[in-house]
Length: 332
Image (cartoon, rainbow, N blue to C red; front, side, top):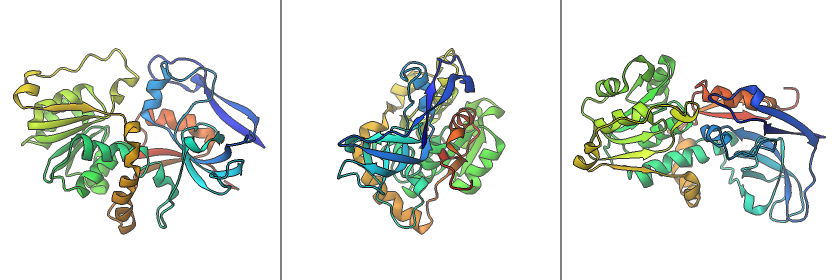
């Protein structure tokens, strides 16, 4: 059998291109004592990968990322063959893992496997932590979310509704995504940020202001939201996807006096620091998934050979919800 691994070959300037990656073939590795071999079934491609391409990822070496797979060979009793696990040695068809590098999936009956990389995975955990721990969402709070049609944005909108938020407002990059947010995800209002100044669009969508801003973008969105926040408003900084491919973007412009005069709080976080909340996320979200009150928002691309394509599609906003790559089954 042959294994495939994706390597980064060069540092991109601006948007990455297919030539910044290459697929490397090798024999399927064999596990050593204390490890297990995972045949991967789903892979996550995420905006933070773009940021890591600038310096963090080693060139001409396997890329890392979140993945789900089945253990097919083991020399570690705690990782039995047939078990389904989560790990971070993605961007390859086969991964050798240790117990410390994996998390056994609970496999709640009726929950699709893909959900453990989307609404029950790092994407959902980011949304859950942002609302419950950083924003400390209160019942009736009005919430604005940037990049609302992405993985974190759709999860944030759905979770905010389930947690008792007041109005939920989102921004997205096309009229079709705006319709999806309102008709499918449950946003009360949404706008296409390409159709005018964000501050004006936000004022129209939330004329009475907002209490919480969950920011995946930065830039003009952050400046507009600070102006729209009410007294004791909170900004949850998740990411700055609007600048990952355009490092020369001008800095955010806003009235700094607003932060003091309205007693605002601006806080960012890394979801990896909240891994202890994974079970709490399951307890919150799984019953809603099973009842139908919560749905995973996913764009699924079939075939590991399309993982680079999926990543570049995500960076250009071609997905709705969390984008995942799924291993092609027999005959696909």
